[in-house]
Structure formats: C-alpha cells, structure tokens
Length: 277
Ligand code: MG
Ligand code: MG
Image 1: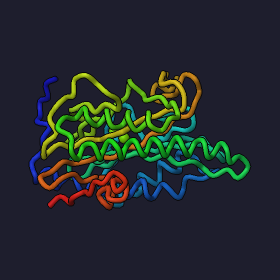
Image 2 (image 1 turned 60 degrees about the vertical axis):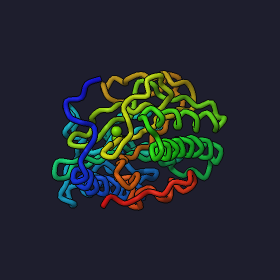
Image 3 (image 1 turned 180 degrees about the vertical axis):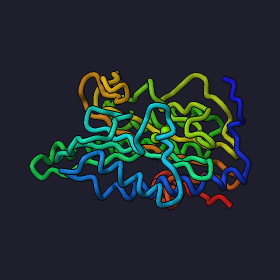
C-alpha cells in the first residue's frame, strides 16, 4: 500500500493530537449520563455537538461527505454508522456512540457502548453488558498489544485472541476496520480487528491509530440499511463498538481519547501509558 503522507508523525504533530483527543473524550463523557430510556438519539447527538463547539473544535463526522451529524448512534442489531434522529431509546437497548472532534486541523475519534438499564429484564441487560464488556476488553487488549508490537497487524491478533478467549462465540466484523488518524480522521494504515497474514507497517514513534473493534453476538455478516449508512447484523443479533485513538511516541503509548491516557484500561494488561511530552 502507498500512502501520500507518512504515517509517522513528528513529536510536534503528536502534541497537536492531544487536544482533539481530549475534546472527543469530553463529548462522549457529556453524552454518557444522557443515555437513558426516553432520550432520543438526536438529543444525544446535540449534547456531543455542543460540547465540541464549546471547546472551539468542530465535528469531524460532519466533514465526511453526505453526513450531517456529530455522532453515529447504533442501537441493538445496528453495529456502526447509525444516524441520530427521533428514535427513542428503550429500557434494555444496547447503544453504541461514535464521535470525533477536529481541533486546529487535527483529529480525535472514539466510541463507547452503553446498555440502558431495564429492571424488568435483568438477563437481557446482563447478556448485552457482557457483549459490551468483551468488546471493550478486546479494545484494551489491542491497545496493550500496540505498546510492544513491531507491526500494526499484531493489534488485530490481540483483539481476535481476546474475543475468542471469552468463549462466547461472538463475531468480529470483517468489512469495517480501524485506521490511522491525524490531519484527517481516516488515514492509513488499516487497523484490522482480526488476524491477517500481512502484518502491515512497522510500529514506531509517530504512529497514531484509531483501534475500533466491532463485535456482534452472532454471525459477523452485516448489511447496510436503506438509509445508506446504518450497518446492521443480517441475523438481527446485537452489536457493540468501542474505539480509542492511540499515539506511539518516544516514551511509549498514550491513549489520546482517554483523559488518563488509558491507565485504567491498560492496568489489567500490565501496560502503563506515558504522557506525550
Ligand atoms: Mg469512530
Ligand atoms: Mg474510527
């Protein structure tokens, strides 16, 4: 593969990636408590937009041709690219929220999944929370692998190994993948969420990637809904999506879209993130 721009950023460029990452994290933090039964997905989107604009940044999703929202919100069998609108969240829904900010020409990209409480259906909530937990765990496993990887492809190996070790038989989306991030939200290299023969480019200081496992409770086959955006499972089973933007620098790795740099999530893997200086 040929990239017009180097995938490796300078130390100054890495420093410029810090603020858009934090703004993206703030937007998702603001949305999190609003994810509850009765809320519309458009209301959640508006919260994210307000948060990003208040920090002097702009939504990078709105810079994607044909897309007019700040977030993608995907509910239940929808996995990614759901369009916010007048859909009202219901108890027990599993809701994935993907969001990004551009600040002074640099980008952040992150996603979380939340299960709306449903006191009447504890088994449903538990089942969906397990899917979200395994997806989030696979994200941290992938980030932890990056800390000592020599090739980008080792991330996907770690994600797949983690998902398989859950013993749940979950599917991993094949047609949607992570990516480099920088001046543009989507740059090279491709970051697979599964094992690939070609391990791809070298991991070295300056690499910035968005790692984003998309995991489903059943078969990995997906379709695009009639709105031309929303990606749903063919079998109607639930999906979950977690994502962080991560930088590799001289001192180690730093999760740009986590205010603690990923310290809490990486602790279970024995990895300590190092701030970008
Ligand atoms: Mg994203
Ligand atoms: Mg992304």
